[in-house]
Image (cartoon, rainbow, N blue to C red; front, side):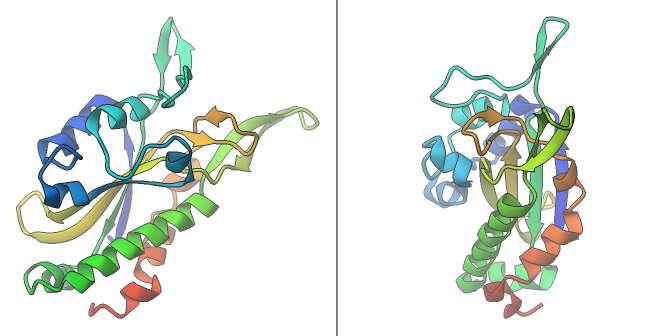
Length: 211
């Protein structure tokens, strides 16, 4: 499958997963280039370019950088907050081989561009929040195109075989049109694997890559 969407259950576990492989700003130069913040929300928070583990874990835990806001709800005296979603975009096997075995850097760059374009599409079309509508006297879903995402490009799968793919960890955090920070309603995003995958495969710079 070109795209998979997985719900994350723990900020700490997610952070350790990427830290184990060194995909953070403190790691070697190759890995440093492979991790980036993405989205209007990330820019608004001043998160910078590359991902640091402490900031990443705090964001996944619901702490809005530069504020005293912590997202989530209190239940039985404890705060509950879902970290977010891992949207993984995967190049087809033949493309991975051409990029990583044949050493064609143009394909890696095309993959990166396709990932960025796909995340821009997700940000503009699939991010929503629930808010109270006074006139209707019920909660409604409204667009909230302000993404806070950390991307990690990998070049191998768990069996250490060539596999070009990027994990885009979309935090459960967005800035609403009124400027307030809130948790996402991730339902539509979680059901959109095929749509996200189709957009990734059809980005103009990626459709010319041999499949």
